[in-house]
Length: 169
Image 1 (cartoon, rainbow, N blue to C red):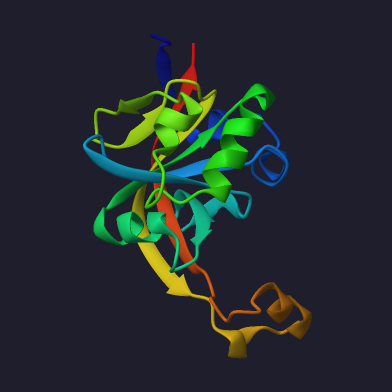
Image 2 (image 1 turned 180 degrees about the vertical axis):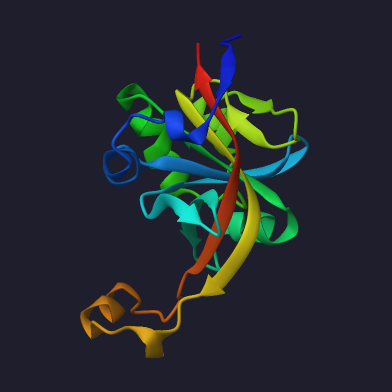
């Protein structure tokens, strides 16, 4: 089994725009007995309320949304390019209908805090939810982005305080 070591969030040297937008991530919520994961390419890193934070977006009809609502913690897992097909699968299939873990051969691991991440990840961000907000169509200054929502299924934004940063050894 691959080993991970804990690091400070400030030690992340990768370009976070590329990590999220080009390489994607798995957003995972739940515990080792019951969890779901989904691929995401929207989100970010920053400092808010003097804390290192991440933010990610989940549509209400996604199965992962149920887990994000039920649990206080979530993880963001980042992978090498060779796992691109697994991330494509996790982003195109629902955990309500298929066993994503079995189909992708990803290996879930439970952290000391009870969060779920994956042995194949190169970087894992463990987060504690501290805020959420639903995107409101009335607040779009640039109305062209409303075209992203033909079904009017606006994302919920979650902000998570980074409580642990794990990197493969």
